[in-house]
Image (cartoon, rainbow, N blue to C red; front, side, top):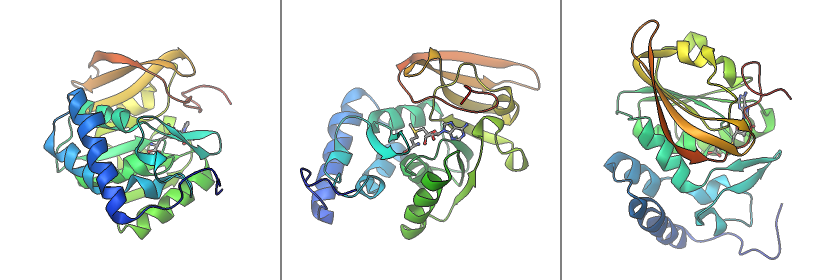
Length: 227
Ligand code: SAM
C-alpha cells in the first residue's frame, strides 16, 4: 500500500546510486568480498522487491515488512548467508522462505539453478511475478512447507533457510549432496538464533559450525515451529 509519508518510486539512476552505496558501505565494509556475491548485489534491483512507496528504504541497512507479517532480510544478512554457503557457478541451490523473492534473485545471478519454497501462497505468487518480469529464468517455485525440502530436485549443493528453526530439519540435511552446505538460523525462540553451517561429509556424518547471532522470523512447519 502507498504510504504518503514515503518517497515513492525512484529513477533507475537513483536506484543504481543507492545500490552501489549499499554494497560499499553495508557489505564490503563488513568484510564480504566474494566477487560473484558483490556483482549480484550490484545487479539486482532491490527496490522492485518492496512495497510501492518504500523504494528508497529498500537500500537501508535493515529488514523491511513485505506483508503477511513477513520481512525482506537486511542486505548484509543476505550476503552473509550467501558467503556462508560457499557457492560455485554450477551449483543447484534450495532456498526455504522465498518471501519477497529478493534473495532468490541474488542467488539466481550466482548459481546455475535455484529452487525456492514459500508457505504463504500470496507471497510466493507476488515474488514469482516480480522474478519473471525481471527475466530471471533459472528459478523454480513451490508453495508449501519448506521444512520437508524438495525431494524430487535433491541433492542440493547448498540449502539456505531464511527463517529461524528450533533444530535443523533432518529432511533438509538428507537432501544435501556430499560436501553440500545447509545454512540455517537455529535457536530457542523467534528472532533469537545462531546462524549455523552444516556440511554433509558422507551418508551419515555432518560437520557443524556456528557463524554468529542472527534474528529471523520463525520457520513454521512439520520440522520447524508449530503454527
Ligand atoms: N528470503 C526472503 C526475501 O529475500 O525476501 C526473506 C524471507 S523472510 C525473512 C522468511 C520467509 O520464510 C517468510 O516469507 C515466511 O513466510 C517463510 N517461511 C516460514 N516458514 C516456512 C516454511 N516452513 N516453508 C516455507 N517458507 C517458510
